[in-house]
Amino acid sequence: MIGSIDRRTVLGGLALGTLALYAPQAQSQIKARIVIVGGGFGGATAARTLKSLLNSADITLVEANETYTSCPFSNLVIGSERSISEQSFSYQTLKQDGLSVVHQRAVAVDPVGQTVTMQDGTTLGYDRLILSPGVDLRWGALEGYTEATAERLPHAWKAGTQTTLLRQQLEALEDGENVIMTVPPAPFRCPPGPYERASLIAHYLKTRKPRSKLLVLDAKDRFSKMPLFLEAWAEHYPEHLEWRSASNDGTVSRVDAERMQVSTDFEDIEAAVINVIPPQKAATIAELAGVTDATGWCPIDPVSFESTLQPNIHVIGDATIAAPMPKSAFSANLQGKLCAMAVAQLLGGRAPEPTVLANTCYSYTTPNEAISIVGVYSNGSGKFESLPGAGGLSPLQAPAEIRQAEARQASDWFTAVTREAFG
Image 1 (tube, rainbow, N blue to C red):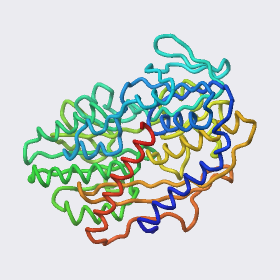
Image 2 (image 1 turned 120 degrees about the horizontal axis):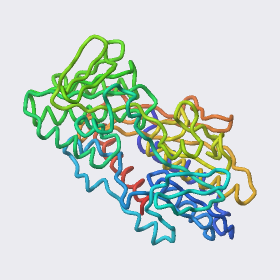
Image 3 (image 1 turned 90 degrees about the vertical axis):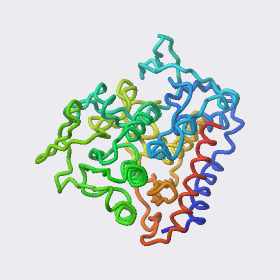
Image 4 (image 1 turned 45 degrees about the vertical axis):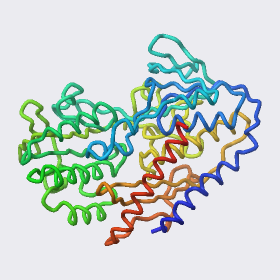
């Protein structure tokens, strides 16, 4: 494992080193039209980076919501350790920085005419389009789970009202009533996210509903940071959390909101609260733009982030096929920077160059302790590849002081990344 201080230094150095390569573009007089759809960690970061690189370009960020509600740290909200208001960020700083922010939903993309159509019928022309649309849920992929069903069996996989709904259901739980969480097959947004959530729900039950229990039904046999999570669960939640793998009848095939019941191949199980995390895909606007393939995700060039299916359209963040890079806010933030730089180079007549990318995923196992995984990747061989010997995991059997230090680092990262994206 990379040491905590060294890891942050290495990751920061990677980003700063890459930015330095593009510094000469900062005074460019290029007057291109650049549209960015999606104002999350990827899109907002791309917009701010492009503004710094191409100060004469016409840059427009299209985002339906007037405030952004962050998924990272929302599991702490579900566990009643954080307020939902702490997850909300405005676009005011981006507007003050001279960016045009359009609070409309993008409903169509014409790759030939190079236009984006808004919900109110207006259109924006572009020379380069960056899509950072995030994910949509595959309604109906799990039998019985629909958009209407989610009002009773919340997914909380898009932060906001669903987050508060799941929290409210846990708060209303009678002590002794049980909770179920279902985890889909990969890929999905934030691979360790379900297991962090399981930890924080289990902590909530242990401390506030001690006769209640969480059952995690998983469509996989292995998951991100598995040894670390299993160790934490055995230490902190032996009576309050049970994880059932796919090979142990953990795959849920059907849900019934009326009966508050989930079904596996061999069992029907009822609970007072059911958190269903359904299968996912790239958000619908990506499909409408013609940049998704049969998997429902977006294949991209790993250096420029340009779609391999449509020219002049770039895709970043959760919607991409970028494995082994995970679908995380850290990845989206870095991809936003690199994509912006690639767009600046392409508009300036230069070919983007391969670089080294990195990702850190922090996960809380208690409200005061966290674990992490670091990955380092290359993109020069026509695909994303993990660099052998780079990255690593938090150590097993670490003292509480190390876990607490990682929780502080997680908080510091969240403060830094939200400031970088939203100001």
